[in-house]
Every structure is written in structure tokens, then in C-alpha cells.
Amino acid sequence: MSQGWEIIFQRAHALLAAKLAYYLQDSFHPEKTSWLEMLTSISEHDDGQPDWQGKNHLTEAGAPRDITEQKYNLEQAKRVVSESAHKSRWVALMASMHTYYLHRPFKGDNQAIDDFLKEQQAYQNVLRKTLNVSQKESETAYTVMRWCDECSLILCKKQIPPQGKKLEVGGLPHDTIRYIYQPKDAVHISPWPFREDNFTLSVEVFCIKQLEFAHDQELQQLLKKTDPELLQWQFEKD
Image (cartoon, helix red, strand yellow):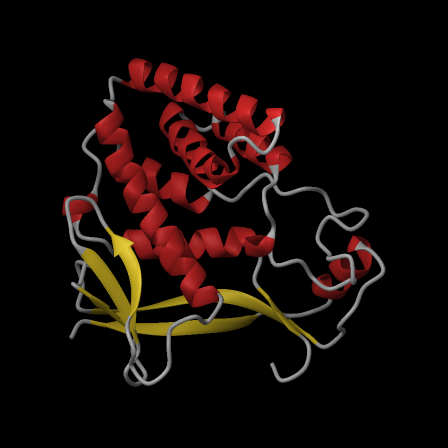
């Protein structure tokens, strides 16, 4: 939009990540769990958001908050790990590994962060033992989750470079670095990791013109009255 905001909910971004994972080749599926549980882990890795009250979803200036620019959110991290345990141990393991990955760069900032990281390491060890999964196997599976998450963020934030320039998107398990680019209309990833040569992905986006909000409820009410639009991408193999 030339003026206003394009808002993609955090859960919608996670669903897009799961859609990407759905099309991955079978060789990327973990051996110790069903692919459905892995897709569930990916689609729910950003749950646990704070309630719509105060300015939880706003910047100090009253603009909608970009979650990727937030330093960390221990409250949400603890909530998503706790809620994931109600689904399965595997979903809980992936959620714990993801929150650990996001908060590890802040180790040493304060005691709360350090305690959280230690708790997650201990929790992951318990889960691996009960699931009979090695650390290497779980890390390999989490690499898939993180790769899909990164690709989804690139798409949602419209970060694919112009004029067909390539952007590194990291590597999948046992593989080289991959690149995403868009020389014309279609999105390409090289090397191609998907089981189909072309497919379409989409995410719902809410386009609003109001720039500032006094509190979360004002933003929430406007979003409820706004019909979402589809942001779509055609993926094609070179």
C-alpha cells in the first residue's frame, strides 16, 4: 500500500510456513514422527500471542507492531511451549527448540532469559528420551521447520530482491545453501526442494489506511471490520 498498513497475522505467517513444508520432497520428512505432526508443529510455532489489550500489538507511536522487530517475548515463548504439550510430545519438542533458537542470542542479557534457556534444554532432553529421538535427529527436523519459517517471512515481508537477484534462504538437512529469486512472475528456489514442479501459495493480508491507534482494541475492531485479501505466489522449478 502506498499509504496505510498491510497486516499479516503471526499465525497466518506460520500457516504459510506449513504450506511450504507440505510441498517439500519426502526426503525431508523426519523418520521418528508422522509428517502430519511435523506440519502441525510448523503451523503452530507462532501461537501464544499476548491478549488484545493495552498496547501489546502496537508500537509506542501507536502503529501496528512488526513482530520480527521485537527483541524477545518470554511470555509468548513460555505460552507456546506450554500449549504445544497439549498436542503431542513432538509438537512440544519443536516448539521448545524454536523458542530456544529465538532467545539464544540474548543469553546473558538477564537472569530470566538464562533461566528460560536452561529450562528448555532440560525439557528437550526429557522429550527426546521419551520419544527415543537423538539430538541430531531432532535438530535435523528442526532445520526443516526453521527453513520454512524463514521462507515464509521473506514472502510475507516482500523481501525477495528485484530484477531476479538471488537471496540466500539457508539450507535444508544434509544440503547446500538455497536461494530464492523472482526473475519474472514466478518464485524460484534453487536447488529445487519440492516434490511438484509448480504450485501456488497464498496468505491472507488485511489492508488498512488508519496509521495510528490509541490501543489494541481500536486496531482489533478495525481488523474485524476489514475483509482480508489474498497475497499469492506462483512457485516454479527452473
